[in-house]
Structures are given as structure tokens and as C-alpha cells.
Length: 281
Ligand SMILES: [Zn+2]
Image (cartoon, rainbow, N blue to C red; front, top):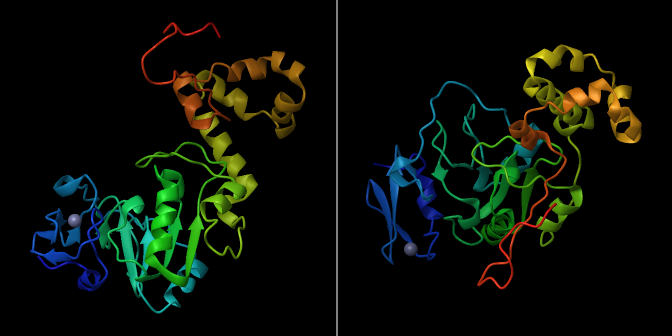
């Protein structure tokens, strides 16, 4: 089978050993013997292999920001769109990377081990992707390796967003954290685009909070004013009121979607010299 995007062969390499890849039709083979299946014309470099999910062509994903795309198209050479999803149209020089096969997916790969030759890309666009990466710092290192000096990255990622695991959700990041990930790059700007406005952050949180609240409390909680909710934070005695106590009935499992943070308790690995009993907390 020919690759959907035959131009890919010029920039692909084995993600395990960096050797050149040979197109055998239904798989790609590297000089060291690593094999990667080709499914529906798409080379698959993740552990999913031939079992990679093929997504139905039934909806269009949110389009990327027009100015972000313009930035990449203006580059005049191949650029990655990581997490492109079900894109509406193919874009010039764009290589769509995903974890499943959508209608325009060129490549199924992990960002932390890109099957791309060093200094062969002109940029990367990734919208709502980095919070889902298990190894974001390794992905950044891979972008630094594969993008030519001066090539642009355009990264939009979550800070105050509830859990939305598809397929995973690992790291919500602050402005400073995002700068830290990309500290080897020359950062031009870190801004808050419209879709990440604080009012929308609050809206999403409240929407999920009401949705997952016990049904008999939903209407009552929905009538709370912003001032009453703000008092829960700034006026601790207000937490004795019925409204706050109603929130305490929020299902335990759903708290994990909206919580402000987590507390971890763990033991150092290795042979135990102390009790294995969890101390009273
Ligand atoms: Zn190899």
C-alpha cells in the first residue's frame, strides 16, 4: 500500500534507532530490523500497532487558529500538526500526527519519540494537546531536534481546565511552566487566547460541577450567585451554610475531574526497614 502522504518517506526515520526506513508496502522496515505497520496508508509508530483505532468520519474537530496555521503555511516546508483530529481540509506542507487514524492523518506517533529526521521540519502546531502528553518535556526535546533553526512552534495548552482524558490528561500547566518546557526555544510570546479566557474557565468548571451534582441538588446549586460562591473561598463561616454543605454531596469520583489539587502519600521503594502501615492522617 502506498502511504497517504508519499512525501513523508523523505523525512521519516526509525524512532527507536534513527535508521532509514524502507517501504515494504504493508509495513516500514528499518536497517536494524524494527518494523512499523502501515494501516490504511498511515504508518503507525505507537505500541497500538495494527490495532490502531480508526475513527469514524462523522464529525469535524475544532479548527486550529487561523493565525497559527498561517504562521506554519508561511514556512514553505513540512510542518507538524500534532493532534489534528478530524480536520476539515488538508493544508499545504502539513503533516497531521495523531494517536488514532482520522481521515487526514498522515502519521500515528508519540510526540516523545518522533519518527522524523533531525532538522527536517519548518514548524509545529499543537492545540489542546500538551495536557494529554505523558512526557511533554521529551516531546519538546523532539521538536527542538526535528525543527530547523528559526522554525516556529505554536502551542496552546490547558491551565485551569477540568480533567478531559482523551486519551490521557496528565499536566495542566501555568504560564511559567509552559515557558520552562520551551526554555531552549526563543519564546516570542505567551498569551491568553479567547478560548482560554477566565470567564470560559469558570463556565466550564461550573458547567461540570452542576452536571455531576446529585440531581436533587442541581436546581438549588444553579441558583447560587457568583458572590455566594466567592464567599465559600473568602469567608470560611459561609461554609456552614446549606449551600456549601450541598456541594459536599458531590460524588467522590467526580471530585477528581474538578478538584483544585491532589494529595499523594507514598513509600520510598526498596527493602522496607519501617512499618508498611499507613500513618494516621
Ligand atoms: Zn530501528
